[in-house]
Length: 313
Length: 184
Image 1 (cartoon, each protein chain N blue to C red):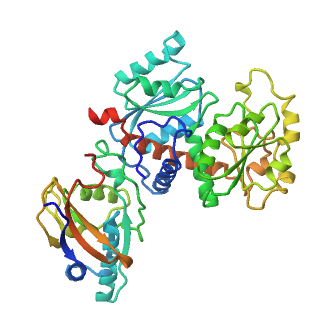
Image 2: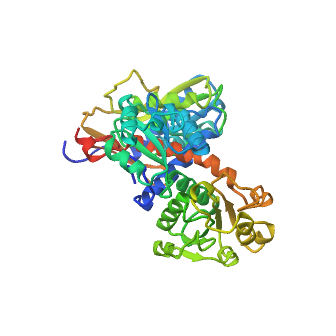
Image 3: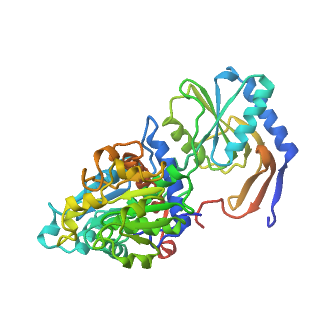
């Protein structure tokens, strides 16, 4: 399996082999992070623009550090202090950045499909760092990396994703990736946030927490995304916690080797209490470490990727 | 040349590795201070084979590890991203006599990348290069210190060392076609 893609836009369009290629590559970049000298020259002389139209801290920092470690130069472009505030279109903004010879655009945008649009109009490599409620492929890949590291393989593995599925791009990337690799996905949360329509993607939809987690090998807790909900989809955070929050008592009803994941930032005391978040079954901080390795792997692989038209040129 | 041409059979390759082992042991310095690092992927079985041969000849354990140079290559802009393999160094290489081992030496670019990759891991006392086959066609001022066999080849040929069980060389063949990994 050799990676040929010029962009990373979503997990939906990747094959199982391509996903595993990223995970294998990331394993070696993780090893680089454990050395005394953590930097390699793979992207020396390349320019990356981190175009974060929607605010982000952890994903941007993770990408920045990945770019540093690959010896790339990067600039951060955020919506708050930019021409986008003055009414410039995304296309014009991106074209201007490309005119500065940017080789990569890492884009976070509130509109689903924004990265796909840029990939059509730019020559640069485009990496989706989260588009609306559509996908967050590098988060999906780091979740898969972490699961593989802990569980060995995906075949027959039971993964429960809990919480705000409807508004979650992480859930969609996880679902695509997990199913391609042979895992069984259960979704759970309030019916308003976990509609039955997700069954069409091949997921089991359960609205009872106990049934959702009792036989799970992996429990992935998603953040309740206040900012993405135009009107409240449930009566209140306290009720959500009472029905779906993970605490020690509820953890006792799961498989003893089930791991707890969370993409962060955690709403402590809402979707998970501190005892579980900081407990020995939690792999939340390992996800952060793995995210760096996965993003290095993605940048490294797409750097070699070409579109057929480019090869003719 | 239109068909694969056999450059070495098993017996000749094994004799070459035995001779390389003896030459490395004959150079100044003790076997205990040597770390062999096989360059991924073809250099790895040669290094392991060489280490066991050196161990047999010297009666001392010779350390051997693997070095991947993908992230340090100078042609990453001109090819699909090469698959990365593991780097595993058996000991701190600082102050050691490192011998980089590869199956085939051609342009010298892999050797250059290996020197850079090595610098990230420590500061050896000395670095040398051992190869099973030197096929010429250098593009950089890099030479091997220990060579199993010198052959002449054309830029359009490829030279492959085929390995069998237990790091044994089955054959070394030359055939027409591009070197692996390079876009046509």
